[in-house]
Length: 203
Image (cartoon, rainbow, N blue to C red; front, side, top):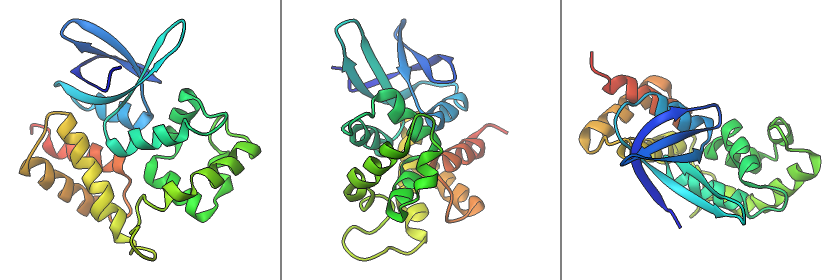
């Protein structure tokens, strides 16, 4: 099983990318947030990988953050949610927004995802309830303040994603901090990653 790959994005499509790893091209399906981050980098990247082995194929899905990968894992345990539907959900609703929608019982947000019908909406609200309580909130007590997702979880995920893109240490942390300051406390992780990459781009 493949758990992680490091290489250069050789091709990016609407639904995935080909990652060149020492001359071997791995086809990975990705969310739009991951693909957006990959488009903004030219160097080697590290993607966390979920492997699905079928009789006729080995299918790979790639993620820049552990939070997104773990959300994908949780989604694919739900009946009628395969890898493509899970990625469609995460493309429309990144983990923090998905968790917020589940906590709020926001059926309209879930129903807006392609391929998600009323019955699946009900199943998502039921089966993601416990998981949603651990994302973007303080699991040890009642509701966390509004600043917690951006100040803690989102920033940490953005720093992790930048590390997977080869940007580590104080430089990545400073870029993420400035990105969060500019975008505001409610910024989503994919927006923070893009803003941080612009911050780090040569001028």
